Length: 345
Image (cartoon, rainbow, N blue to C red):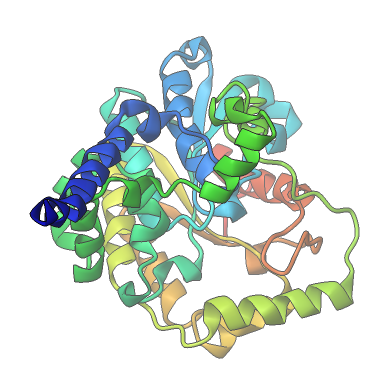
C-alpha cells in the first residue's frame, strides 16, 4: 500500500503536463486578451486580417507604421488634412517593441501580397540594447512572433532567447503567462468575458481605428514632472546601456525587403524630452548609433529623420513620449518629403 504513494508525485506531474497543453489551443495564441501591453500584440493578429480585407486599398495609397510605443500616434488622423482622403494608414507598433517586430509584420504583409506606398519605421536607441538584456524575447519572441519566423531566424537569436523558446516546448504556459491575479479578479467580478476581443475595453479602443493609439495627448508641459520622469526613465533604460548588433541586422533585412518591393521607408528617431534626450548624448548615441542608421538608410534608398532636430514641437506626454499633437507636425515633414514639396535635409 505504501508503495502506491510513490507514484502520486509522478501522477501529479503528468496531470500538470497534460493540463498545460490547453494553452496550445489557437484561442490562447491569437484571441486571449489579458490587459496592458499584451493586448497590443494579440490585437495585431486581428489587425492583419482587417488589413487584408480592407476594400479601401483598391483606391487609396497605403502607409504603414511600425515601432515601439513612440509610434502609436501615426495614423490617418495625424496625416496632413489635405491628403487624408487619398491615404489609408495601419499601425502595427507595439509597446517595448524592438525593430525586429516591425520587420516581422512588414514581412508578413508583403508576403500576403499587400504593398504599401510609404512606411514610417520608428527606431529608438533603447531597442538596440545588448542582447544579454533579453529584449528580443520579451515581449516580441514570446507573444509577438509566430513559429515560422522563429524557425527562420533561429540563428540570429541569443543563446538565452533560444533557451526560453525551448522551455516553452515543455510548458506552454511559459509563453502565455496568464495573470492569475487578473483571472481571479475577473472571475470574482463576473468579467471573464473580457478575455474576448469584443469585450476587452483596451482592445476596443484599438479597434476604433487601424491600430493607432492617440491617448498620449497633452497641450502643455509640466517641467518639474517631466524632469523627474526623465531621470527615472534614464535610470531604467540607459543605465549600463551598451549597443547590441542583432537589431541592426533586422533593420537591414527590413530595408532590403522595402527596396526590393519599391516601398519608400522613413527611419524615424522619435523626439523625447530634453532631460531624457541628454542621456542619449551622454552615451554618444548621436555619434555611434544614429550614423549607422543613416548609413543603412542611404544604402537601401530609405530616408533617416531625426525628429530631435527636425521637429520644432516641444509638447510632451511624459519623459519618453511626445504629445500626439507633435506627430501632426512630424507627419507633415515626412509627407512633404514623400510628395517632393519639401525634401528632408
